[in-house]
Length: 95
Image (cartoon, rainbow, N blue to C red; front, side, top):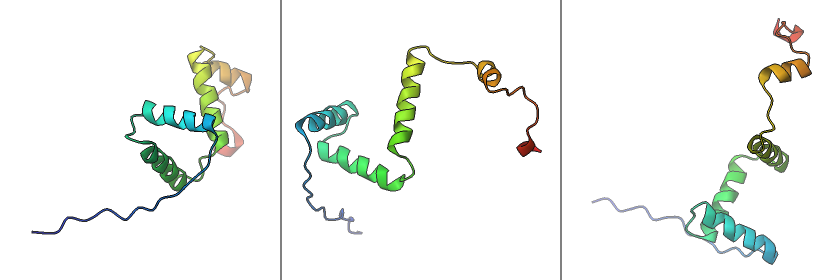
């Protein structure tokens, strides 16, 4: 019978944050179904390491877009084309 692989040893890391920020963290991990605060923080850090190109500006842009969609502030593709003068003609870079 093969031995079961043991999980890597974990080290404890202490971090400091404001009470308000900790409250936000706690609300978020519970909201997203994580089993613990530590599990959530490990997941967030893992994502940050795997996707370093994803930054705060990207997150803000996505959140702004989501808010605009929920508030009904959207534009059709025809409106966007008209606003930017894109009438479907071939651009120099497409040739």
